[in-house]
Image (cartoon, rainbow, N blue to C red; front, side, top):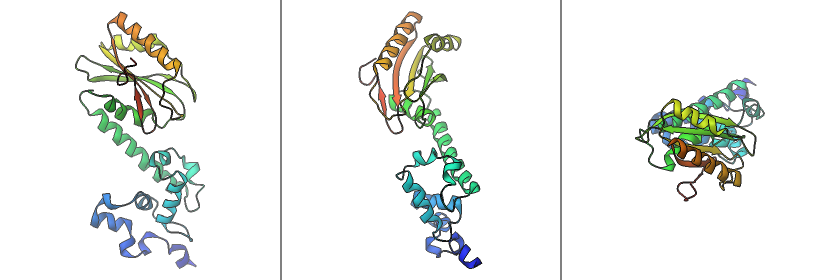
Length: 232
């Protein structure tokens, strides 16, 4: 009975099939997503290996790691063979990856394109199931000196107080700002309220001599830039 229970442990696999050994010998880049997750969970169940279990988990989110990162510990433990400890390992690893991506993006000394803004903001708001509105504050060299969430809303909208946007800008002597909010629906097209809010903030910024450099709508994998499409 004990042999049956442990037959799917990674240490009992053929040497060529062991993802840990493969990583050490051949390098991390050669491993599939399922093999990397298998290393995290260590073993599967009586009926399937850790890699097979990992493939099944990935298949449930269409092999999308961003979607996997949104699964809770509770949701992960619903898979046979995944206990709380294994679920916590998966959640922790994906969160570390998200934070690493954010830190790498923030190391950029100067904003020169909308894509750079997307790389900074996507890890923060791209995967959320509710809308959040953020402002990036820049100095006269287009370097980010601060970023702040000014509003948090529901699934389809969020209210923004223009006064809060510029109160912060004045406090830190920002000369330019970039607006960013997410669309949980995945739609990239700006709504009429998005357009009106952008113009409202732009007009207020002109009065205070603070330039609105761009407004990005961010989804899980893509973005819409008001500046790039001449809508600013």
